[in-house]
Image (cartoon, rainbow, N blue to C red; front, side, top):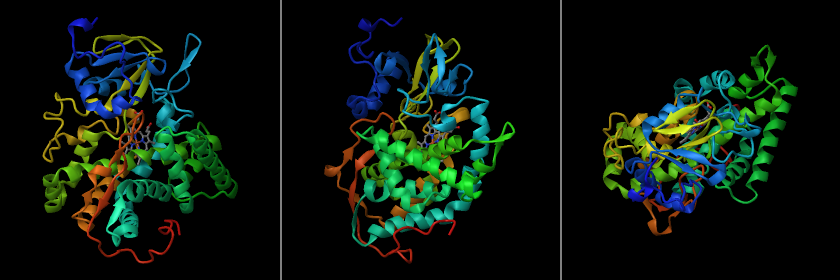
Length: 426
Ligand code: HEM
């Protein structure tokens, strides 16, 4: 038991850990440092039904690789109380295999993962280049844009809608609903349910026509699990999971990347001089800014984490942003180091059996955008006085407004007057 009176940096009882609080959004690196270095690597919070927050890298990794103790499923019953899910508190609806446990989760993961492998993403690269150019072409002659509205909020939904083979002309509608949801805006639940309903209608129509778009959606429609096709509700849930997983975190990290490079001209120049290091720096920026705030698990068998005894039914929140700045693993952790040997070991994509299926795609998007910005807008300057950050970061950490100016340049993609990039299947 920690004697809090003797420990000036332990969180006071009246200010429990709360990743939904504005104070957390403003001071999370400091709050986590106090936990790690102040002898409180696990703290209990009564908020959101009660949970334990875990701060140290090795503890987070351990929890993520022990599904037999720490489960992701949503409907886990303990003494008549149902708890679970991969977020604290649980979201309105299940997030596909992200909120299932083995063996079930692995069945769907095996079907989906090949469609987001390093090789698949490499093959998709020319198309990704075109979409990035198309998005930048819309603003390149004007000399100004808002990196969030004109780039970050456009690119990831366009890419995932394209890859999934969803109707291209609906990208904006989906993106709007998902962006609202990630910041828990009023009315967001209804907007998200409408998108889920649309996914269900699409899946029904594909099934009825016996023809879905090429790629992962058709693989799910054609798959058999335990000798039967996956039912349409579950296919729709998995498609929605891919759509939502691919949008807001990447949007946030595009904004984090631009704001960081603007504040660090030396690093930006290094990337211009030596584009080979962009990949490592993208990992460093993912580590430092941690666009996905955290993951959650439910204790299903007695376990100990950093001296805290946890019992079945306890909820655990994993402070990914904290693990990413753990000095024991990443010395001089608050600094971006293009030569850091273990940058890729950050936890921003999670770890273990639920590690982000879209990690290769997300990294490719971030590398491609960064390279294109450095090439096409090398003097890009952020209007720092006009920056706006998310006031709270319950799920996603990033900026909401990043106005920039740059020297105008020429367009690259022919046919810009088209309302959308041409769908992949066309
Ligand atoms: C910078 C961007 C991204 C970040 C920071 C991110 C972060 C994460 C994290 C932390 C997890 C693990 C959750 C857990 O263990 O409970 C995860 C899982 C997942 N992500 Fe991402 N993600 C990103 C982009 C994407 C993209 C582009 C896709 C689209 C395919 C995607 C789809 C998924 C899926 C389907 C899972 C569940 C995997 C499973 O349960 O087996 N993510 N992501």
